Length: 276
Image (cartoon, rainbow, N blue to C red; front, side):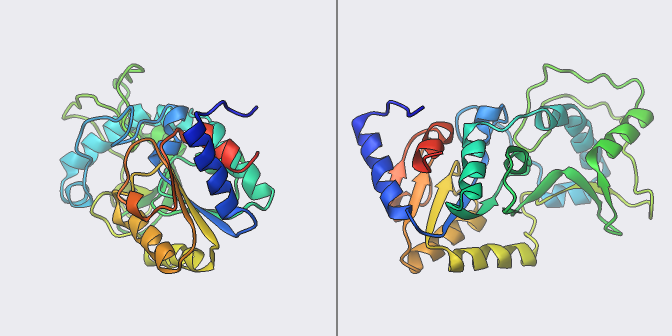
């Protein structure tokens, strides 16, 4: 059912539709598209005020690793139980209808695929996969949780703990928390996601850049573009003189580059933008 938008916003949506209609439209999505699924972001409404763990901190300290996995063991339930919202579903329908040709997401929650999208490049990886930092062995997150539970039988999960965007929770961690080691080489596990300060795998960067080169229009949904990996893609789109539409609650670092800037929830705007 069409939403009753204020006239200025309705005009902006109509203009944006005209700019992307009939073009190979690329989507770049960020944490803001998942807030209506109950996953908070760092910078927008519902944000959790904290400094995320960096790659160097995680790799340089077993204590940091134990703290991360204890908090993630609690917070993971929020991620795995989250359901796609209208924004995710709209993009999946638009992809299936041939209105968009690729989704690049900075999110690690898997909600685009859960909504039915298949052409998704996960720039920063996924939380439901865990990788050994030494041998590269991959395990499913649910398997790791079973091992954590076996090692820490007296650890009590607090269902009311405040969740964080990266899938952990705001809890105090006992020094005795035990972390499983790799079953192949005995190394340390980390979630198969790009931590703050970690480099995105080059092949993913190349895929994202190739998508921008092939696109006829770019829509940014739910990202403040504070991370350079996303901002670079928008700047390249403008260098190619293709239309750029930004849908985000709050300012972004690329507002001056947008042909249309829509300050509205992605859950409301995306179904209207793609008429799905």
